[in-house]
Length: 185
Picture (cartoon, rainbow, N blue to C red):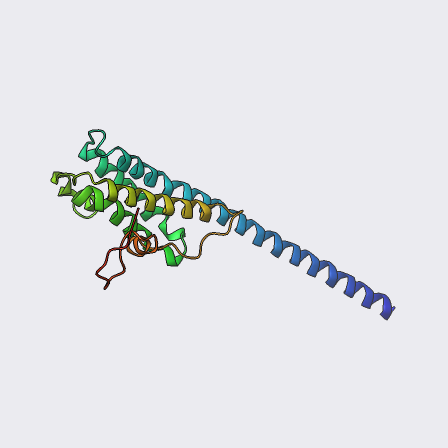
């Protein structure tokens, strides 16, 4: 009789542990699936205003741009980053400033619309093909990195260079402290 009781206790313990392990594994998988879905939504929401800023950069100097349209694009980026930027890796938190710096180099003070609503009274900067290309390329780099982050099937880059570092890495600007400009595009 003692042998049967021990077998029953062993079987019951095995059933309980197997059920608990299955529940834990299933719950962990479900949480990971939900996180991937949130990351995908965040990536999509973050890239949309970047693409709009790229469109405006490409049109600037070729078409007449409305200051309100440019201000709206910067506000859309600020709103998207405020809502979804916390999902990005910690090392990427500079992306907000870097996107504004890249596009702001071209458009001027209107890029500060999120801080100074009266900046819509400022004129847009003068078109400059070199800086427009730099900003467009940088925004494309950031958008690709964010989309890779949102795609759970791909390994996201560990870091995304800030705009100033990226300019040096792509040889579009000399490192700080060097007098000679690097040959660029």
